[in-house]
Image (cartoon, rainbow, N blue to C red; front, side, top):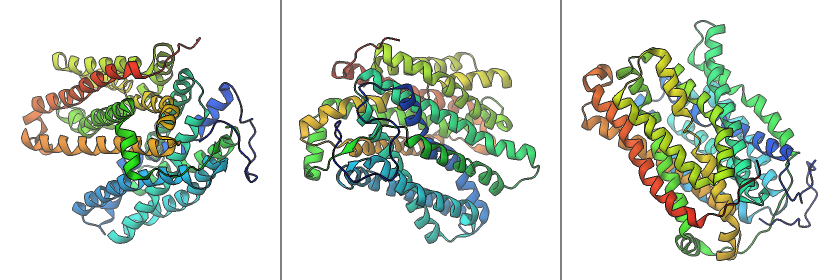
Length: 448
């Protein structure tokens, strides 16, 4: 992607802001954050509600539901780099990022409607095909949006602000996504699981018009197709750029830590905190913590640098987890406070996305072509791989310690140790890598 404008066919949605802004305007930052809405609400909540909805339909055996989502995750891992390469090399010209996003929205909306209305009555093969197309559309939109952001930034402080506000908006969208089914339950007693999913999915109808309006306010950037360097060249260029490899490892370790916490949280709430029926409230509190903390971490990243701010985040959450070994939260109020503070650490992508944006120009100079969409796709792949690895390791270790969900108290202490030490160990290694990254990352303190 180039910073300068290039001659290109007229775009069907003319931009409302010039493409050559020297600095990021508040309107641009807010508009870019809002364009993340459609995919922000279809992330974690979708993976929480969809599997039990499919299993409840009875058409697909419970054991095969896990296989279904495992296969779609594998597909995601294969298709993400291909999507990134396609965005970098196809449909070039002014506004190419936005055109990809618009192309992704239509199938994303149609597939979402089909899945949440008749998904529980479809056979395995048909549902698998729908899920593959759904997540491919999801990745196309998200990767195009992320790479558009990297083309907008001019300084490290800009990238922290842009992706920080994107993270904050995503946290607000997640709060709404988790609140919608709860509100539906309160307003409509006895509502089915499908009804709750429909209440959640209806937020998509709000996010899409908001994103379309916001797209008009984000300055366009030109994408100039350049000859590919081949997969061997891509691998050599990546392996030979130490800060990039360190960043991929940081992404994997942060996702592993986050995945460890989320995969064990329900068991932890039930067996250790004895708050099984309030686990949804505790999970909701963690997202409130993230929404509150995201702007503060953005300020810290702009002022002190992203590696330093991310190290501080990992230390804060790690110490909070270790503190529970000495004093467990007791009662709903203490547990909610613990969850809220724990959620302040769920902002790692804020730093990681902005660090990659800072490295894009240096990577392009090294390998002779801009491959920002490809690199963001690889970064997403590292995140998905980290979460998948965390789930696999967590459940394997649950078997090792003899944890039984029906009698969680029998292995509550072992579960507590696993809940704390697994993410803390991952973040400890990540801190070591971030210390190595400090000398590779540009930083100029922003005037706040």
